[in-house]
Amino acid sequence: MMNLSEFSNSQKLQQILLAEIERSPHQKITFAQYMATVLYDQQYGYYNSGTVSIGSQGDFFTSSSLGKDFGELLAIQFREMWHKLGCPNPFYVVEMGAGNGELAQDVLNFFSNSSDNDDLIRAIKYVIIEQSTALIKEQQELLKSFGNFDLTWKTWTDLADESIEGCFFSNELVDAFPVHLVTKSNNQLQEVYLKIQDHKLTEVIDQISTEKIAQYFDLIKIDLLQPEYPDGYRSEVNLNALDWVSAIALKLKRGYVLTIDYGYTAQKYYRPSRSRGTLQCYYQHRYHDNPYVNLGYQDLTGHVDFTALERQGELSGLQTIGFTQQGLFLMALGLGDRLNELSSGKYNISEIFKRRDALHQLINPTGLGGFGVLIQGKNLNQKQQTLQGFTVPD
Ligand SMILES: C[S@@+](CC[C@H](N)C(=O)[O-])C[C@H]1O[C@@H](n2cnc3c(N)ncnc32)[C@H](O)[C@@H]1O
Image 1: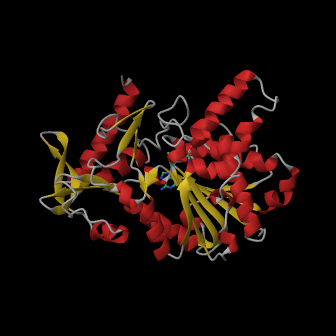
Image 2: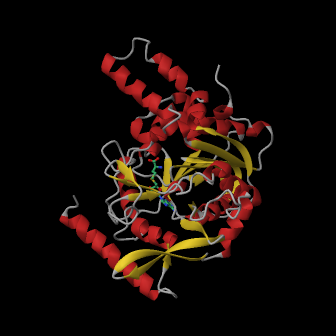
Image 3: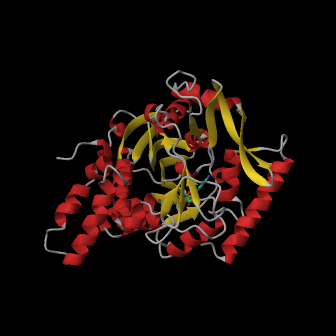
């Protein structure tokens, strides 16, 4: 049941959408515009109104909600990257889309907790790029004890081109970008729009809103007009993801881009049998597929097409270093040792159960462990492209 304030936030968003639709050339907006408004409207959008709730009691949880292991294992990978680059000072770690700040907290704590990391701590410039002012506040509150780090919040325009030596990284960011909804209709590639009909927000199908959508399918070498795709086939196109990769490539001078998210290669993503796409809505820890309810109170996501990130990266000067699953990546970074250590006698029984469950969730191939991990690089030699996260653990 929605409470009254929820209702009023949803009503505000409806009014904003109505005005957007009325203002637009053919009184219709793309699904991407719709998603941008309901998630990112500065005042009432899900991520900006202060409603977003990440964690075990929230609308959804992420790997960092399960405890410190995820962040610590990523920190091990960042430390290796720093060594591979020849221990530069400054070494940038740029986290994009930092949620409630827990992941940054776990990474920074890991570095703080060992005196071996003193040189690295002095070299690190930890930068957060976050679009939500409400979440920036939460992050700043959580991270205020890390005065020993050079920790700052920046926007893309604050970063000069080719200025970053280090690693750009994100966990579950790209799935949150607004997506276009496309469909195969009358043997044409068409797009889903929203219109007002009979006072109701209604889906209508029309020509694609931009040629970039057709170019996207050329980029990933998928043709929805092939006969194996049924009429009415529907899926998403994340054009924002392409712009995002290009922006990173431009800012990176030398180093890595680590992207973790749920998703597939293009071949799997656009499998003919996946005829309803991958759009999902999260509301109070349950998921469903109706993006037109709980406006401003639910998260909307689309899976990530990792092939598109790779191809766009290659066009922008990034080479693909590796693509694997989160479970394998974390095992290679030492998650197995952490599981073994649980029987060392250091922990009490309830700690063992809790932590073992968390570690298993991180590697479960049907859950978080099945997430994709993509690492791209720029201006790296062969040695610098060999990373621990892609090795096979003993
Ligand atoms: C699903 S949450 C993931 C949070 C966090 N990375 C984690 O693992 O818990 C998505 C995050 O990305 C942020 N975000 C969405 N679009 C963004 C953009 N264009 N630039 C920066 N942050 C963005 C959201 O505000 C939110 O903090």
